[in-house]
Length: 386
Image 1 (cartoon, rainbow, N blue to C red):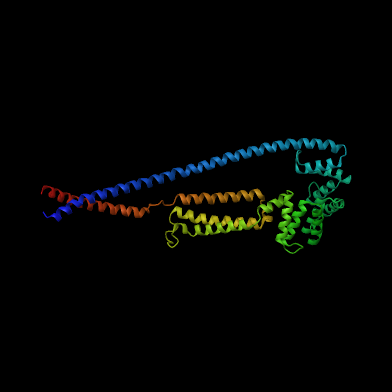
Image 2 (image 1 turned 90 degrees about the horizontal axis):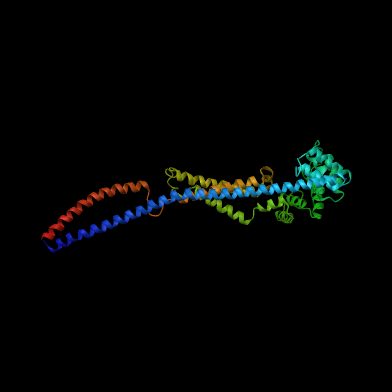
């Protein structure tokens, strides 16, 4: 046999060793991929359980603390109610007005409008401005008496003439809404300014609303925001709500980012299947991706509505309901995004159909390879014998 034939025969074992190493490397890579799949399948539920458990613990602790604080506050209110009753029965007008307020709102005593009305009349008859204003409030809202805006306005005026700011604000509200009087924004602003001059936070907030909506004045959001800040500095609840939900630059930017992210996810760019319309929503993960994008866009729209229509939101569902609902939606979006990321294909992982086809091709190749190896092994043995 020639020297060239001997060299060709000796190359066969080298190729066989190289193929064996490639197969071992492929087996190791497959094992690593399987291990990663198992890790994600086990780790993701554990992570969710831990998050839910920690959230539940913190929520229970918060609820317990809130309940304890409520009990302590109720005890203090009961003691205050007993003290007010003792002084009210001795003819103290301020104590009578305070006791009426507690009966009207059910603080420290059972809510009882009739009893509240009785004590407010006693205080109003003594010329107490707080009692007169409170009596006007009960007539304007029909609490314990038939609703009567004219009588309410009469009592409000009696208290406002004494410089009682809350009564002045109430008169402004009646003119703004046209309750018992013709609607008159200019007159409403005049009464609001009387309260503002005394530093009343409610008057400052209501004046801010007039500037915000352009009622009786030119619409001026900057001036409205200034009055909101002044009222909020005094702890006005509604002003604090407005500022916490104001549509500032940061929130505009975050909503734009959220809308872009939702559009990207909804149109399936993340799955790289936007041009394959027949396959884009075939499996469960693709449907989750599209649904997450639409939920993200919906959440952004709801946030925009809440920021720009805070007045409607406060009247319809209140701060807590709106905020909690938004938190739930945002949490759902984050959880779905985690699912999309964690359920995606790992580096080196192939589609199942392609992998199966390659496996079939590999089995055919193995048969051919074994035949070639057998041929070279015979050639090697013949070379050795020679």
